[in-house]
Amino acid sequence: MTGYLMEDSREAQRLADKVDPEAWVRRYLVPLDLNNKRILDVGCGPAVIAAELGRQFETATVVGIDASPQRIEAAHANIVDAPNVSVQIGDAHALPFEDESFDFVVCRFLMEYLPDKALAVQEMKRVLKPGGRLFLQDLDGQLVWHYPIDQSLQDGVEKALKLLEKSGFDPMVGRKLFHLCHAAGFESLDVNIDPYHLIAGPIDAENLALWKTKLEIATQNLTNMPEFKDTAAAISQRFLNYLDRDDSLTYSVLFSVLATKPR
Ligand SMILES: C[S@@+](CC[C@H](N)C(=O)[O-])C[C@H]1O[C@@H](n2cnc3c(N)ncnc32)[C@H](O)[C@@H]1O
Image (tube, rainbow, N blue to C red; front, top):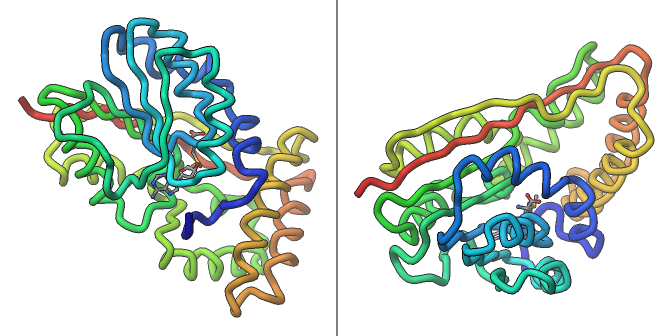
């Protein structure tokens, strides 16, 4: 596949390490009671969440889709014990499913990367049955919200983000999920917000390792851009140093939108 900013052989493991699927499903989806439903996870990554959905909702059928063959290979290994879960390769902009074939669509941390977010939301709506629900979740403010400002770091990050805009990457996509669902014709929109990153003072070793891998992958892909060939590694190191300062605070928030397709 092409175009995904974080494409890398380490990505499936990085994604799996970043989430506690049992806690996530319990917090966000168990209250929605998805038993007996056909569920689609768009941009499922290594499918640790899809596998957990299969375990929590034994009478549901769960399908995970991801554009990356590497992610889907990892996903196959993660769903071996979940007979009601399957995964396949596919693009969120052109979902390979018939109209009205799912009761529930979940999409976590994909919208921030997609070139055509409105088209993807339309696709999710198309494959939902009337009355079916969409759960979209994404970040707002990651990489950009810090205090005190390190101007050189901020300038470097903002320059990189400006260029990445063309690929669809949007660190402020969280606040836009509501509007995307509204524009697509969903109704009964329910929006929630949670804290996500919150690093005050020196970052702990586990999270530093996750950020290091994330920035290494992004940097390696950024160095393909002539504008960043020489500076990407330095910006990345400056970012890691910033996270390790005694006096620095970094944060982002998590938006969740639950939306219903009209009957
Ligand atoms: C940040 S990961 C999120 C994975 C998972 N949803 C989670 O919450 O851990 C984004 C995933 O979207 C996939 N992806 C990127 N572009 C895609 C597209 N156009 N269609 C489907 N999947 C895509 C990537 O391969 C990656 O696995």
